[in-house]
Length: 116
Length: 112
Image 1: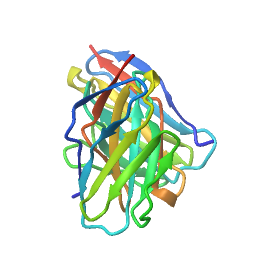
Image 2: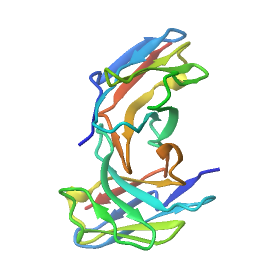
Image 3: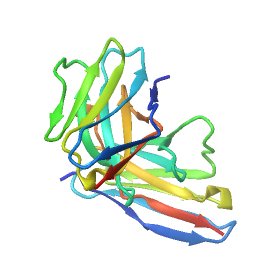
């Protein structure tokens, strides 16, 4: 149990276009989902926390108008990178928390975004 | 703000030997959780072990164990009988009220 999927796993887009990444909890309901960004050979940096039915909370320095997060249901959160530029190229990872017990997060396999 | 520090960017161990990865953290919270995650080349984050701060007993999962020193805010990971499949990036993580913060990571190489 506690499986999180992401789609797509890899996306290439042209500069100026928008890209949507989906994060799904397959076998549990996730009241809270998290979005991370990971540059090569670096750690995971939290971008935002999203709670079902409410607006996402963004970390300092993350542009909320550029990285749109929607958590419309207890099993789905989406991250849309708007007007993507080459510097947005990165590895994006989502995670979901099943409940408050242990504060454990279950991670998706990640999405590699390349902006040309 | 909570910070997590991993001072060893790279570590190497001989197969079947034991290695210890270091982690320290800074927090003013009294109730929190600590984790070690493994990230292989596939980049899928895999939970290795978890420690509740209110528990004095160190967590153990098969070949993996931790040395949790709450007063010193230290949380090291010991891998016994290292295997080739243990080679990966290892991240120490702290979780308090809501979110999770990660250390910079330690790349572990296992030599046959």
